[in-house]
Length: 512
Image 1 (cartoon, rainbow, N blue to C red):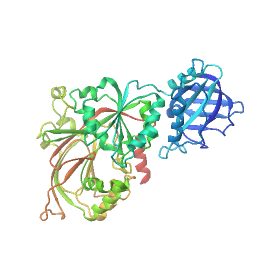
Image 2: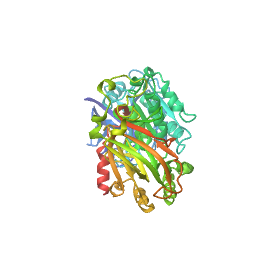
Image 3: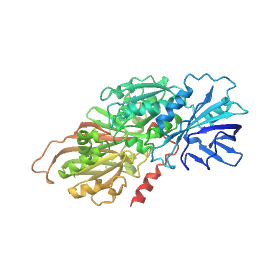
Image 4: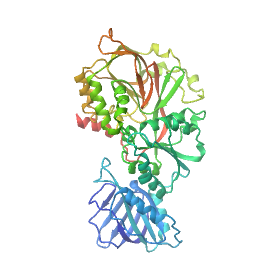
């Protein structure tokens, strides 16, 4: 516990009550107050009994100032951050400085699903000095964990094309205020992020993040896990600031807004995350999100024509495709989680180091799956195997999935009418489509999918067409047989302290 007597000169907070920063009736500034800094956060109490609390979770910086600075009367992030940077740039505060600035993310009405703002408070220490106050705040807020550079990969052309704006107006100033060192790369073409990750000098970086949609994040993971030193590379914390049109990873981390995502990176806390491998012939791809085929893959790829519409592009593409619903043909081999140990490679094999990427215990042998317990040869109109609950920011595909549960949730339908297909995507945020009798699910450690083409009719006798594509977290691969398996807890993902994955199951239950 650290305490001091301070003068609070101004506080740009304007909301009456929030979760992150909980004020009593606002005092008139400037006002003298008793300051306390603890692991819970920063609070000050005035002589009239006003108490202001700012939770440590939402504090991202504290800065010593040589001179006081004027208040900005807004919570709008870019305006407040610009003012904050102006105050600290070229700042050569003396050792006995008394003024300091506190920086925090301010939630809107205490909700993380509403646009947050940035809160700044100017304080003046009367006893301890500004430097001691700032050091106490930094320690209490858990700042200063990332001491080396942060690799920042921006896709300026992807999704809504807002990545560069988000970086310049939110992420960069927040990182600078927090004292992070930034190594910025703009991707120039597909798989550029993969190449950067493959050649990254790991000892120079504390983390690697993307400001993008799920595609560039997928490339980052694939690059790290296809290095010769992948066992070291996988330990590098990875993160994302969502700027795409789907932003599934951001939704799964409960950090949909740039302010919350940047705060997550600054804090530097990680959680283990499963990835999965997709083996096709001699090629192995690693990813974080999903494998899709049939209706969902068609919608994802065909929606590229409507990318200018943002998140609505998926809805438009889905309606168009459902009106001309295809029946796909294929064979599916499933290895349920509770039977996986009976079908893995020998212990001696699993201990052998892999030259590139995690060892494949269930899919390294092209014929290993022929003895698995579930083999389904049928038609498919719908197929997704997902590693995470949300496959886009508005589609809760598998409420029971978790970041590190060692399983893929396989969801498929052998046959659906256009009406049923519309039902399955009509309320995607609820996860209720899983209740329909024509939807089947299986929780697996590995799977093999052999696509056999598609037709407009269910029997597949006439009008048979060649398959189009499979979708691996947004990456197009040919519709040839694939062997897929989960690699538990391989990556470390930067995750916010408030993330509660059980919330997704409660969300689905509440929607029923």
